[in-house]
Length: 267
Image (spheres, rainbow, N blue to C red):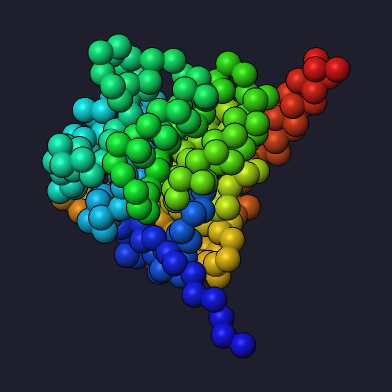
């Protein structure tokens, strides 16, 4: 019996692709999670740029930085996203600046408007394999975290039909390393976790692939580095264990008590 070959999309980081069997399976929606400053956006920029090089349609939704900021970051690593935008290979939807005269601005952080705008962008770019980044999903439920799962499911259910392979970024709080609403992880086909830890007095960023369906993936924690003109590099696996980067028991209890309190309020 022959095995079915799975089409995979490269992340644009060769050393990371080796950890996941060559890339992300086509059509998957992958949660990229972690605290601010851990490398999530840079990872997403690599993924987007590789899509442009591979002639995929690329849509990038930015909610926490302006369109210009994303373009500037990419240029630091030799990636000319502005040229891709000018050549109709990519659309960057800006949900931060809210410029009403800009076709690709999201004026309200509303999940239905987001989905509609993404579909409009895909129609504009045309038929074919597409990559989507939403950076970040957390913006859409900051004031209503209980809706996180419903919103995440809605995004996946509707956009899956449009041949997207997506990275859905979810911000974790710096103080607790927990999500602003539990949702993306539950509906995602994969979970890539970025984080940071002080090692011998030095701040080190790391990545861990917590889940990726239909993939025999690496289960170890890898430190990462970010270099000008190059971008993200994945280093050898560390001696850290998952429990070494887990939350303190006191914080876990506080999160549990907070969730239980919210559930009681709903009742």
